[in-house]
Image (cartoon, rainbow, N blue to C red; front, side, top):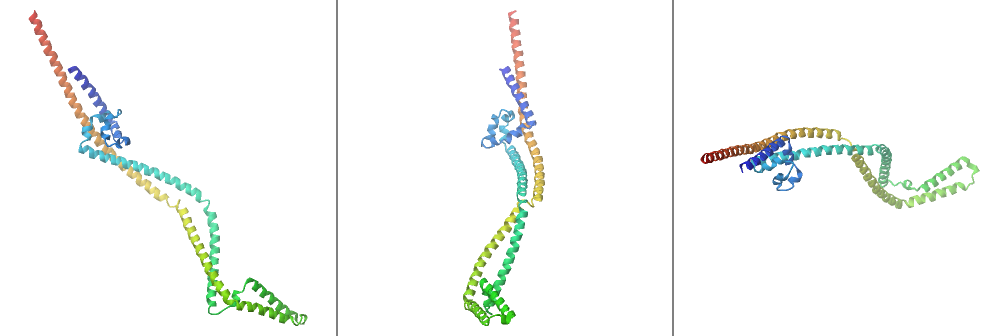
Length: 315
């Protein structure tokens, strides 16, 4: 039985030595941060079942202690923060790629769009000025009626033709038949009669058309504003991010370095606590081994003395 105890003590001492070496190589900390274990509420107990981490088999009592749990919590928080920093660093790389794709897509399109927009903008400004002049003229006509302003295009052409005929009559004099002047006057009278008698109706229609034009102008202004916002959004989607990303990279890099330093210190503390616990167990087993050896040696001595006494009696 002493021999069997010594054999088992030797096996456990080798395991403890292997566990201490494994902790010093960093395997203990890697086991503590395994995601598949932390998804289970009994993950600390399941550490015993990991074949590649023999050191955890002996540390349940230590890991259940308050000091170790607080230190472990700090280490796990730092590990989570370190992973977040790595994720954020990868996100910045993705942002840079997205910005490059946006720039490659929008930059060739914007010059053509801007050129067409400038043409549209100049035309729109011209039409707005014309609309303002028409509105002002209609407002003035409320005080001083001007029927000639509301003549149709056909009437204006007809008026020009009458004026040419009158000029010809004046230039040719006696060569023109005598009744030609009267006929020209009658034509002008008919033209003026239509213009003046339809003035009120035409003025009302002009105001109605002006109101309809205002609706179109409002629609154009909305389109104009929408284009400006879209143009700014397209430009802002890839401009102005360089300095921000650079600053964030520096901040993440600095934070990552601090987290690594804190993790190293906190991890060393956990490893030291685990190694001290295993060393205490090893010292206890070593004492048991020594006692077993002394007991077995004492048993051999007592057996040898009894055997020698029996031989002396027989002789």
